[in-house]
Amino acid sequence: MAVFETETVLHCSPEEAFEFLARPENLNRVTDPSVGLELVDAPERLYEGARLRLHVPGFGPAQELVHEITTFEPPHRFVERQVKGPFQSWVHEHRFEANGDGTVRLIDRVEFEPPGGLLGMLLTEDRIRRTLESSFSYRQRELKRLFEQRGGKPVDE
Image (tube, rainbow, N blue to C red; front, side, top):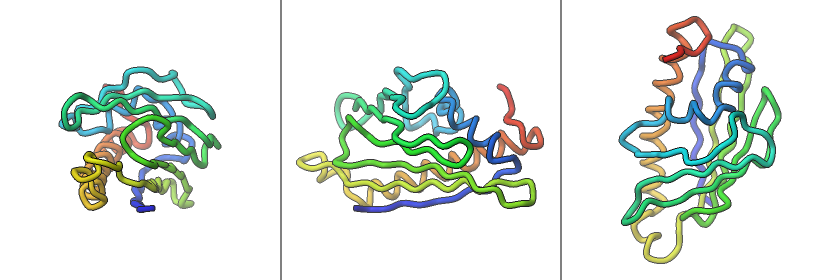
């Protein structure tokens, strides 16, 4: 299984970062608009067992993705797993670690197996990794911008 991991340091507490990312409405605030991600259905706040239904443009018709929260441990971590979608396997762990200096280290770890069949010929591990690098780079910039403009409180736009 392939692994992608990245981290971001934010000027806020683990509780503030966790709460922001535990609200699916904020997904669009930190996702590059060019991705075309559409949040179709989700609870107001995540919890263990919650499901998120998303549409993402793909090769041909939009792909429907359904992710389930399998672990929810505020303010330390939550884990989402793809239960429907193109990947053979997709698990995204979000960890929040206090640095002791008023900042939090947000660690994102994605374990994945590319799709099989014809789609797998297009969505190779290398291509998925490049997409993850680009997507998380955008996400990191937006999180820093949102949290640092207001001294640890995300900006309401």
